Length: 239
Image 1 (cartoon, one colour):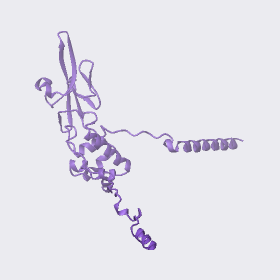
Image 2 (cartoon, rainbow, N blue to C red):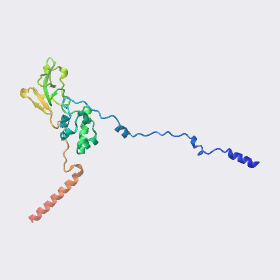
Image 3 (cartoon, helix red, strand yellow):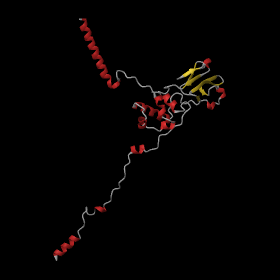
Image 4 (tube, rainbow, N blue to C red):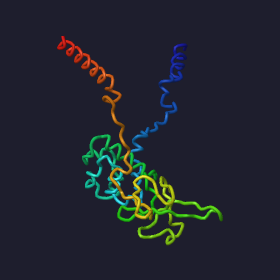
């Protein structure tokens, strides 16, 4: 009788926790998406509209300098230039890497509207912008002079005031002289002209002194050693 009771208790034993594992709440598996992957699959680069001073690829590459004009045939359209990344520029043969970085940096600045001198010109014809002096009566006893950009062969009086931009970087000096980057004065103080020039917007590279920061100590040490050696040889010959 006792043995039968023990057998019944074993049959009614509560299952272990491992046996009931299927009843445990399971953690949800959430796929992890890399931010870098999301960035690569993001929308294509923005293609900005040309500006009067820079209407095409050829002018842009010319104006930012660094010899990029030699690559103009590699970019058939404005959209093609602004749609390329560093790897694609490398495949096209734009070398060295610092030149690719420089070009990509200028493309991004252009997208952001961060132009160089003359980027705010409104009237440019065949790469030439005309500048004139505009006099404005402020008070009955004072007049102010401004430099304005006007269409070629026009005078400030023939153009509405809202179409006369005042470009940054240019000012009136003396009576009617216009001074500013790349401004060439016209005869009889009739104003000035700015012509698209190679490297107008170029960021000039610094000049390395004695091999630059990395090799400066080594270069100077070798120079001093050569000077001491030359001095010893000179004393030896003198003796």
